[in-house]
Image (cartoon, rainbow, N blue to C red; front, side, top):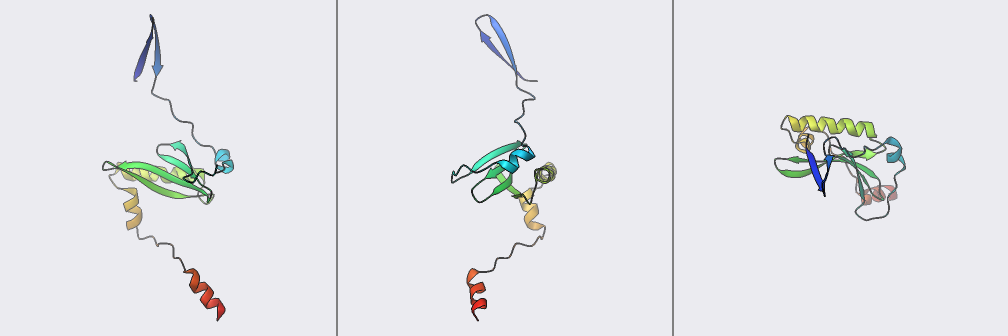
Length: 130
C-alpha cells in the first residue's frame, strides 16, 4: 500500500492512496442524466475504462483502453438498448480479450458480424414516387 506523508510543522498526516475508487455509475443516474448542450458532450466514468458519453443525440457506452502503447476507444452500445449491467459485461469481456493479448476492436471487426446497411435517402424517395 502506497502512503504519502504530508508534513505540517511537526505533525505527520498519512494519506492512503490505494482503495480510492471513483464512484460507480448507478442505473438511476444513467436514466436521468441530460446533456448540457456542450458540442463535444460530457463523459461520466464508471471505472476500469467504462464511461458514458452524453450528447444531445443520445447516450453512448464507451471503453477507453491501451493496446500496444496506443490509446484506443471501444464503442459498447447506445443506452437504453445497452443497459448499465450489459455495458459492464461487455467491458469485462473486452478486458479478458486484452489480458489474452487480443485487441477488442480488431476482434470485433474480424468476427464477421455484418455491418449495418444504410439505404440512401434518394432511393426511398425515387421508389415512392413511381
